[in-house]
Length: 446
Image (cartoon, rainbow, N blue to C red):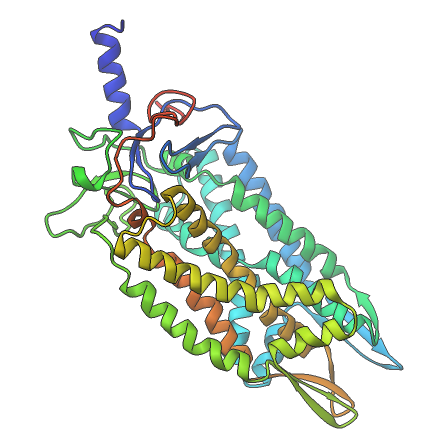
C-alpha cells in the first residue's frame, strides 16, 4: 500500500500533467511516456500526445529538407505536353498565375495558399522553433509562432495537389504526349516530406520546451469532465485553465482564446452548412471548365467530367472524381447535419464512440474534395493554345472551392464534446481508466 510520500508525489504529478480531451472533455492525468508511444483518452480514444525520439533534431531536419524540395519544385518546370507540334510547359506557380489572368483571383489564391504559401510558413515556423530549442534559448516571437501551427495545418494540401496532378495527366495522356519535369518529382517528395513533418510535431513537448507548464488549478480531479469543474483545456498548448466568471478568457501559457464547453451550440455549424449547400447548387449546375478544341467550345460540369471518364473506360479516375467532388461533400454535409440533430435532440440511434468516429472521418476527408479544383487549375495552365486547344475555368470552380472551404469550417466549429453530453464522466469499465497506467501515458518532463 503506498505511503503518504507516494500519494503526495502522485497528486503533485497529476496537478502538473493534466490534459482535458478536446473531443470528450474528460480530464486525464498523464504519466511518463517513452519515445514511440502515444497517449490516448481512455473514454473516447482520442490521441492526446504522441512522443518521438529526438523531436527537435527530427522536426528541424524534416522541415529543412521539405523547404529544399519546395524551392526545387518552384524553380524548375513542372509538367508539359506535346500534340503534333503544339505544346506547353508550365511551372508550379503557373497554376495560380494563369487563373489570375483568366479573372479567377480567388481560386488562384486558394491554390497558392494551400499548396505553397501556408506550407512554407509552417515549415519556416517549425525550423525557427526547433532551432531555438536546440540552442536552449527560444528565438524571438517563438510563442506567437508556435500558436500558428495548429491553425495552418488543416489548410496545407500538397498531398491533395499530387492526386489532382495525376488525374489531370491521365486526362491529357489520352490525346497528347506528357513530359514530367524535375519539379514534378521534387513536388512529390515535398508532399511526402511535408506529411512526415506534420506528424513529427509533438505540441505537448514543444510547448513544454518553450514555456514550462504551470500547475493545474487546485482541486482539479482526473476522471471528471473539465467543464463540471470550472476548467477548460487550451486547444493550442493543452494547458488546463480555470474558466473566468465571464465565461471567456485566454490561456495562461500561450494566450490563445479558451473555448470552454457551454452546452450544445450548433448555430455556427448549421449556418456554414447552409452556406455550403447554397454554393453546392451552382457548383454542380454550372460548368467547372470549358474546353476549346478547333474553335468549338465544350462546357463540362462535375458530373459531365465523371461521365466522360466513364465513356473513355477510365473507371478508376471517374471513381476518384465522383468520390472527391460528389460523394465526399454530400456525405460530409449529411453527416454534420445528422450529428447536429442527434446532439441537440439527445438521440441514441448510435453509441457515442460510433458518433465520434464518424466526426473524425468527416473532419479528415473534407480537404480531399479540393482535388477537382486542382485539376481545373492544372489543366487551365497546361492547355493554352488559343482556339486550337485550350481550357478555361468555369463559374463552378469558385463555387466548388467555396463548398470545400465552408464544409471544412463547419467541421472545425462543430464541438465534438456535445456528443458526450450527459454521459458518465468515468470511462467505461471495459476500458482502462485515466491515470498512471499503459492506457494513457505521457512523459514527466520534470
